[in-house]
Image 1 (cartoon, rainbow, N blue to C red):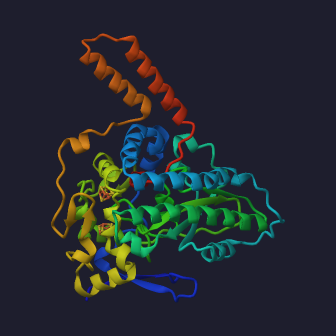
Image 2: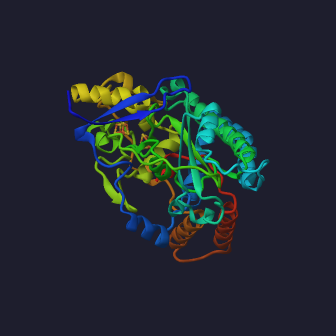
Image 3: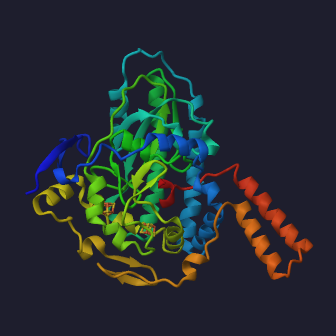
Length: 424
Ligand code: SF4
Ligand code: SF4
């Protein structure tokens, strides 16, 4: 049995469940939250502010959507989701303008808000300040209130274990809609307490939300790039509400995950795109395993949104308490090396068990365009002009003009489902 360094006590999974105690072995202790260099975070946010992938990587997004649309069921899921989700996004965009329906009592309403959130179905809720350093450049002016209520909604267990699959894609998008509707309800409740609330839709992000979830103690960043929450790991969808309510903040927690991922490495080993880094690097002021975006999106585009890194994570499957308890008792990663945890099937390619990965041709990755629509239009324009011996025809100019116009109009409406690479 390993020596336990500290224990973390968290509320039970459902409202009626007893609290859970997660043992953190001493050898896995690092820091609460994530190792961070605030001067670097400040510098990057000022000099190189983040922007949503829906703008910065729009060319590959359109390319990926065109590939998905060749799959009849995927196309229908996306169409249905866009139709049902758009009203939720529009309501979220207007939510800050809803005026309080009573006068604030002045007392701290943290527990009232947290209880209501749990009642509405959210699995995890924590509060911290809204950190503008992570805001996307195009959304910086939009955020109105200083406190961030971080909310995680569980994605159903069974369909998630079939990743990558149509069933998993259906539950992925429907979970976003369910939590989007629940968040609008929560803002109505905040209004009755005498305060404002602003819903940041999970499909219309104002920034990567994970740093604020980590600051609020709701989990730690996994090597897969997802937030690993105590009960369901990465198997949840996250969003925030900002508010001017009188609330108290939670603090970051060391669940042992920062070090555990370096021992586990299951997602790194099982990623079909070899898109996850084995070692951590310092990136924009944080120490983390960085995702190779250019190796992830081509797989997501062609294989039902992929998500294998979510499916094979032991914390997703067994919960953090069981995983840490098992590690403390045996020094082993629960489920590692088993078909049950690590196996997956890829449509058209077959089944891959532990140690076995699919192989892709080189152009599987290199065919993907990069940058925003305008940048890619210019790259294509140059390539075609060179191929034509430097002759720039009227048709070529017109094609370029139309692509740039399309890019500029897209930037005004950058709604999109949050994807793997949005977790920065
Ligand atoms: S979603 Fe991306 S990072 Fe995750 S397993 Fe698939 S290719 Fe790898
Ligand atoms: S699979 Fe292992 S390494 Fe990857 S995120 Fe989960 S715990 Fe961390």
